[in-house]
Image (cartoon, rainbow, N blue to C red; front, side, top):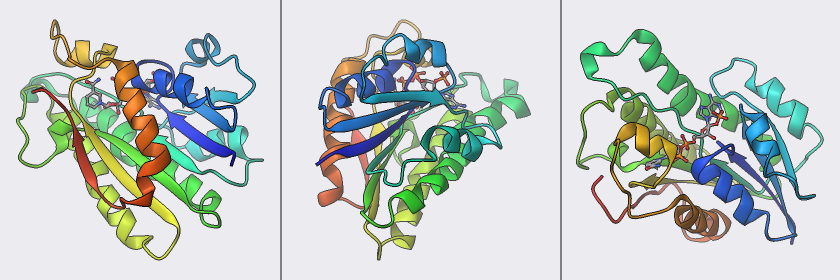
Length: 229
Ligand SMILES: NC(=O)c1ccc[n+]([C@@H]2O[C@H](COP(=O)([O-])OP(=O)(O)OC[C@H]3O[C@@H](n4cnc5c(N)ncnc54)[C@H](OP(=O)(O)O)[C@@H]3O)[C@@H](O)[C@H]2O)c1
């Protein structure tokens, strides 16, 4: 059966690979969202991909989403994969540094998710949030990542709260806390570190979980990592 799938953070890294992999099934229609539309135009050239501008840190994100998805009644899968990283010692963080992480990773994800709930209520759907092992309670922590990882912890908590509030509907929400994946973001967080997992490999796992995971999981926070970090 055909599925409508939304991928946030689609312009590069894991999100770009998700769009490429999920669009290989002709029955899927993939909506690729981020701010860098030029980057998406370079690889979103298939009939079953629609790409568009959405800025999670903007107050207007519902309007931006409506411009792309206003005519689409049903969304089956939403992957909240976008992420904003700031890597700075705690005392050097400006209010804007902290704000930028929270506006995209926590406030933006919650506010954008509101837009999709009515499009999932009838047929049901799976919302998959992408967080980090650094946001998982009790995991090994690293200096410089307090703005980023605490904002990503917001989405961990959101997953449990949303699943409880919507447990009597057909909407499911889960969260994957990723370990190191070789992307530009990882290079900013851990310069010179070589991750054991490529963006393509992680996207392959996430795509499969997004399509099948809601059958057995709801409100679950799962670590997906073979390394530290
Ligand atoms: N790579 C890792 O080792 C690792 C580890 C743990 C968790 N993660 C998580 O996995 C996800 C993907 O990471 P990645 O490594 O692929 O990151 P990445 O290469 O930095 O890509 C991040 C994506 O998020 C989008 N984005 C950033 N700010 C946005 C905003 N305000 N509105 C809309 N989109 C925005 C970017 O697109 P635009 O700039 O075009 O908007 C980009 O497409 C993120 O949530 C990240 O936190 C990654």
